[in-house]
Image (cartoon, rainbow, N blue to C red; front, top):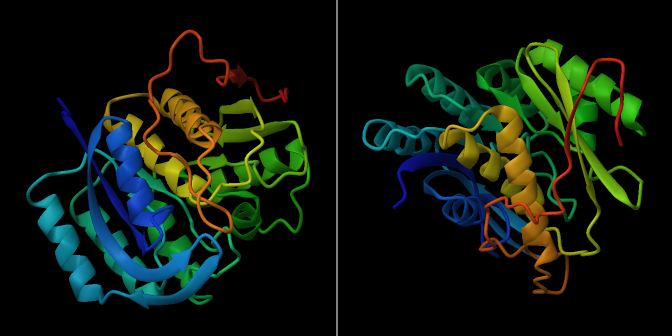
Length: 286
C-alpha cells in the first residue's frame, strides 16, 4: 500500500516521455502517490516541440491551493516553469504552505533543443524559486548559466560549478555530468549545504533514447525524499532507477525516444549500476 505523497509542478508532454507524464510514472514506480500542477501544455514528440501554451497564473495558483489544502505532499519536484509570472506563483505558494523536500530541476532547454523558459524568466527563477529549493539538479549547460562559468569540461570545473551554485543559492546542488564528453563513465556531483560533497559514478548506457531523463531523475529523487531517505541515499536510489529505465531499452518514436518508467525502483545486492562514493574536499573520484 502506498503511504507517501509527492507533487510535480511542471509542463505537460503530449508524447508522454517527459514533463508531468514522466514525473507521475516515475513517482508511481518509486512507490509514492503522485499529484500534479501543470504550468504549460506542450505539443511535442520525440523529434521536437511544436508549440507551447502556458496556463494562467490564477489556475496554477488554484491547482496548488487545492493540493496543499487536501493531500499535503511530502516532497515537491519543480520542472518546467516557463515564465516569470508562473515562477512567482510557485515560489509564493511553496513558501506559504511551508513545502518540504523541494527539488528544482531548472528546465531551460528540451533534449531536442527547444527552449522551455523565456529569457526574462531566468532571473525570476534564480531570485525567487531557487531560494525555496532544498536541491537543484542542473545539467552542464544549465550549471554554466547558474554558476556564470563559461566552460565546464572536466571534473574540476563540474565541482567548481557545484560549489558556486551552492554558495549562490544557499541550497544543495546536484550537477549532472551527462553532457560531458567522456564516453565510458557518467559522473554527477552533489554539493551539500554543509559544504560536503559526493560523487556518483556509473557506466554510460548505450541507448540514444534519453527523452525525459532529467525529469525522471528529479522526480525519483523527490519520491525517495518523500519516503524519508537522506539526500545522499535518495539520489543514489534515484540514479539506480534511472539507469534501469534507460537500460530497459525501450525504442519508440523517430527521434530521442522515452524511457521505460515501470522498471523496479528497488536497489538490491546484485545491482551493479550503483557506484556511490563519499569523498573529502581534496579528492575527486571518477
